[in-house]
Figure 1 (cartoon, one colour):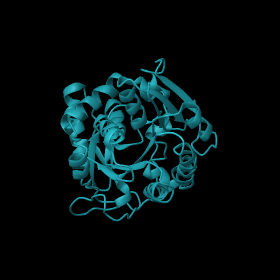
Figure 2 (cartoon, rainbow, N blue to C red; figure 1 turned 90 degrees about the horizontal axis):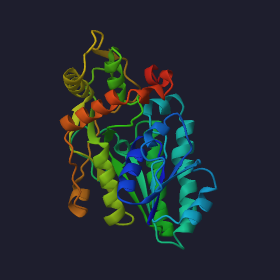
Figure 3 (cartoon, helix red, strand yellow; figure 1 turned 180 degrees about the vertical axis):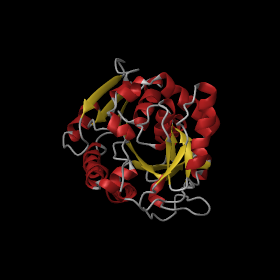
Figure 4 (cartoon, rainbow, N blue to C red; figure 1 turned 90 degrees about the vertical axis):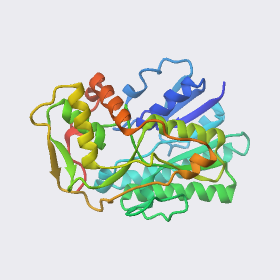
Length: 336
């Protein structure tokens, strides 16, 4: 049985990816340091599977080297990262430690391991490294212009991976994805926070005037793209992964309201409430994903209307998920 390591597998995308890989008959080792955004609720459906093992470890820890040689994975998906922009504005240090120092340590371990065993490293990054894309869509050759400490730390990690490919010839690939949504996402992020507020009769906080535009992809589509990159991706390449579907934050909230009215009773306090914008807030992200579509024949399958309905239903049916998270992490405003 082929083995795959997923770092950050207690998180949103990581846990959805593990679910997909187990269904495809891989043995998955989940390495996660267990932070506020890690959640064992995310792995409850497969935690007793014979094809799953959890190891509590920070990727900054040198023990990562021993784990690679012990389990001999065929692939490593690196999703271990601090990811919330607002938190990076409050405290950039943890982003530097996890997203740069952690990736450096993982690369050093992988450099030694990949000399003796065949393996791919897939490093998962973000569209935020490109910064504001006011017109058109950014392809893989677009310059990096990150705006937040979070985006800058991810940009640095991408450059580190790329430099190790060129200098040390490691078999690694970088993917840059648009905003994900779907089941198991921490409610500090826009869509699950709005869903929580709808279910709890609270106002829907939207930054500024709600005109900031993001490209949205259903998490399962992203995970399938990552799997395709593992199977067919070319070492040393970068692949953008997006839906080509942009929505403003206001459009997202209105779509959620329309869906929720069909599925639950809406309280009288559930209305859009514009709040003070965060510093350096990019206006628009938009990816050109033609490369992965043409080279690897991957295409997103879930349109936003269908995906947002599935997402709302999951949170409505899993309200105990919210109880597994400290309430302050759900309701507290973050960022300066």
